[in-house]
Image 1 (tube, one colour):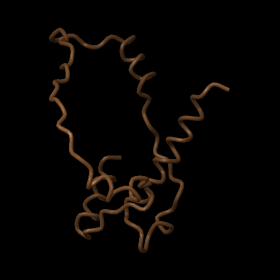
Image 2 (spheres, rainbow, N blue to C red):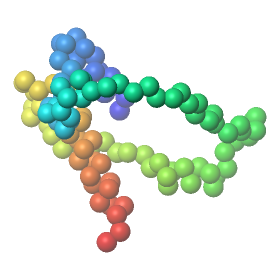
Image 3 (cartoon, rainbow, N blue to C red):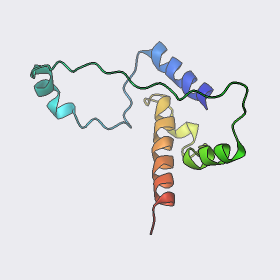
Length: 113
């Protein structure tokens, strides 16, 4: 998974084409207005660190099961063939579109009726 994404990012870097058409950009009509707006100084804040774990202790099976329920592994879904995404499109387009489809399917699968 990460190797595939990294390979596509490297191709984008080499070609200098960073725009991904599949990613919506709702801010584009407002970019000039946003760029000319007043900047605000935000206060700095520190995020709390992770809770300390006892050394040498393996996570329990219950904890592992809970983590799998909260963060289930994502399957790779091949919706588009490589032939459909070749040409003028960036190589990462296929990956982005497939992730959108997988997000929608995951959302509707977990939503109550």
